[in-house]
Image (tube, rainbow, N blue to C red):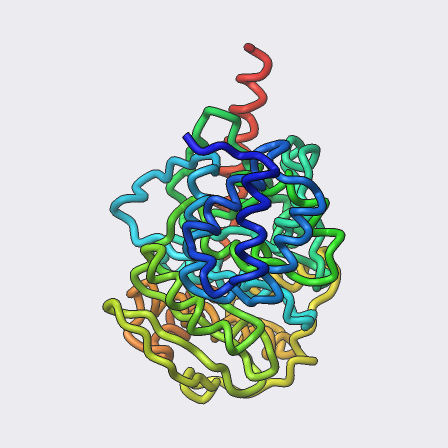
Length: 385
């Protein structure tokens, strides 16, 4: 068994700083084990390690991301997905950090795709660096760091709750069309290094790992990145992590979604190969809208927009057309990845029907009901303990 001490970590840190070209994925795994074992690395060493990874850009190598994800998955609490082996589970998520305060499009698109027949288990990752044990215990998500309203904020404003697993007890995830889980609930090891990450003036490898550590192990993903140069890296990392079909996207404005304002750079993972393509609303049969027309508000405001969009049937207010098209773009992509639509125009038609028929809203209500049932079961178990 390997010994994890500040002295053994010092050797790894020296290798990373002096000869980064020889710092292997196995070295990274060993270093990360040090970070997650109390007392195995000194605070100064942890800060130096995260800075060196960033400066040497090792966090942008697909093999490094895959190695780090493997370590975190091995240390994660477990989830038991009902029919997870037979269903083609999908997720849609962005890495964050794009600086654009847009409406909660990925969460809304996830619910819309679920209403159209996809099995969506979405992971909330924006808050990995600031989650703490109290929030985990109280089953609350942290606030968004780069927007006014994150996924957890929106869903909480819609009266949804998030179940958290107990140590040693896998969390059952019921078979409902849409489920949202908070990654920090399943990766408590990250809480150990949260103070170091918060004290640094740059995003670390852990900020971009979230999409790779969804405990539901989705087979299909739409993943948004804020930097074009990360597109191929993430497509390769998803492939190495076992994802079968994916679309990694980066709006030309540095948006970690499919942009409604013009071009989107994309990397399509299919049949084991990766193809770089360019997307535009024209390909979806939709109009172009400036990002200013899809700006987000407070969680309460966004929840109101969400509910109006999904409960108005065929009478969606014209003022919401830009947001509607923004959602349809991203929901369509997820439906193509899920294998439910043969192309983006068909995906738009399926997504639009999901909205106008009320199926999307029903998917949200099913998730809300499942959360209530889980919490009631947890409360009963605590009373009987």
